[in-house]
Image 1: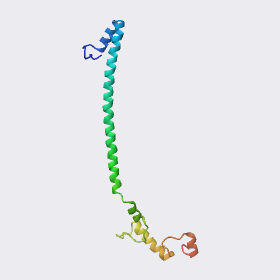
Image 2: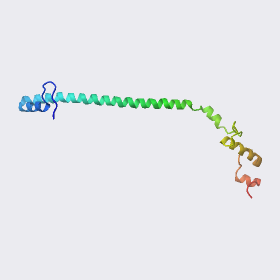
Image 3: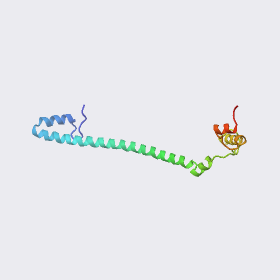
Image 4: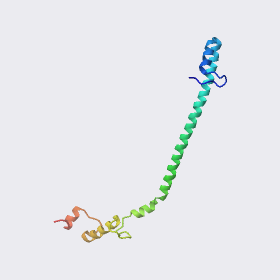
Length: 137
């Protein structure tokens, strides 16, 4: 079922039939009719597509900005390179709480044992233990 054309109150199908029945002049009128209809439908489709595209684009932009802001706040709360380097330096002292469970406390205990056993903070290896005569018997 066709919708009425605004200017005449007739449907597009009725106007087409009238133009076809008119002969040679009808072909020109039919071309004009379709030209106007195509312009209107193009404009309608373009406007609809543009509005939807703008809405999607704005949503993507908002998501991107949110990711940027979240990323910056995460980066700004991270320690600096100097702080990381200072924290990563291996120390032979236990942590300030002396919990005996963290990696720093475990390393301090191992270093103390190795100093008494091997004379150095680290395990010297299998060849050195055989040479020193230390190990399982």
